[in-house]
Image (cartoon, rainbow, N blue to C red; front, side, top):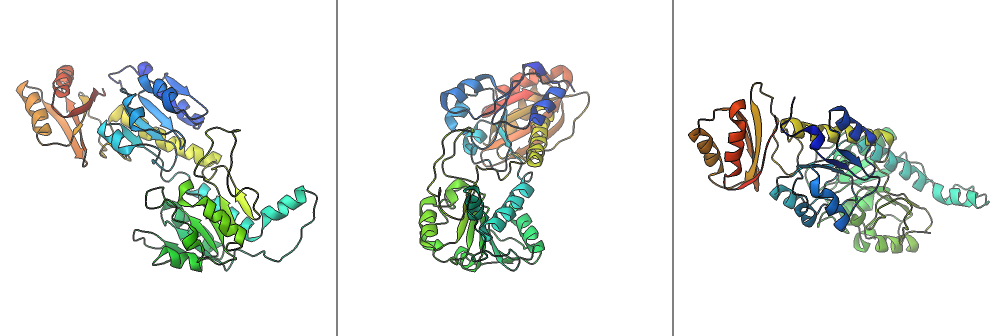
Length: 408
C-alpha cells in the first residue's frame, strides 16, 4: 500500500533501549527514518529532538508533558513500550490529536513470576543468608524461614497482573485474597476483601499492582502498615509512589514487618550506572531491584511486537484500536479510493461542515467512519482518488480541525 507521505520522510524516534524488534519491523516495512537511543531524554534536549518526529516510542522514564507536545508539531502517535501511560499527559495529547498506544498485557507473566520469586526469598530470608555467605559467614538456621505453601497472598489491584499472580500462587498452595476499588470477579478460589485494611491484616505476603494516581499515592503508609502481621512481607512491583518509602523503612526497623521487596521507587535514575539512594538500603530482609518487573527478553519482545503493530496500523490504515487519546476505530481498507483522517474538536456542526463542503464540490464519500470521546472526534473518509487533494484542503479549513492527513 502506498502512503501519501513518502515513508523515507517519516521520522521515527525510539528511546530507552526499546527492543530492536521495533526498529527492524519499521525498516522491513520501508520506513528508513528510524533513530534509536539507549536512554531517556528530558527537557530541552527532548523537545529539540521531537521537532521533526512523526512517531515516538518510549518506555517509562521519558515524560511527555504539555510543553513537550507543544514542541512536536508533526507528532502523530506515541507508543509506550510498557504497561502504563502515566508518563504521558493524555489530556494534552488528546487535545493535539496525538494517538497514544501501550502494551497493557505483554509483560504480565514476567511481573507475576518476579513477585512469586521475591515472595519465596523474603519468606526464607534468602537475602540475609546470601549477604552473610558473600561475607564469609555461615548462616544456616530455620528460625524465621517459612514455606510459601499455606500462606495467604493479598493482592492490591486485581487487574491483568493481579489475576495472573493469583492463579500462579494458588498453584503453589497459597490462599489468595484481593482488594480492588472496582468490582472484580475472582478467578480460581480467590476471595475479595471489603477494605484495604482488612486485606493487609490477613496477608502473609502483600503484593501491590495499582497505577499511580492521586488516589494511590502513598496508599501504603504508617497508619495501615500497623495492621500487618509482624511476620508478613510486602512486595511492590507497581509504581514507586504507591508506598511511603520512609514510613515503610521505619516499620521494618521497628519489627512491625518482616521484610520487603521493592522494584519501583519514587525517584529512579534515568540511565544505568547513575547513583541511586533509598531509605531502605542496608536493612535486613529487604530486596531492592532496579525496576525489572517487565525486564525479560520475552516480555520486551512481546511489548515491541504489540506496540509496533498498533503504530504501524495507525500509520498505514488509520486504525486506533487500543489508543488512550484518539477515539477507537478499526476499519477495513477500500480499493480505488484515497483515505483521509480528520481529527477535530468534539463540538456541534463539525460533521455537518465536513459533509457539506465535500458535497458542495461534488466529492463523493465512498466510506465514512466516525468515533468521538468527550474532547475530540475522529472521522475517516474514503473519497474518490482524483479528488482527494481537493478534499484535504476543504477539510483543513473546517472549524475545529486539529489534524488532517491523507493516508493513501
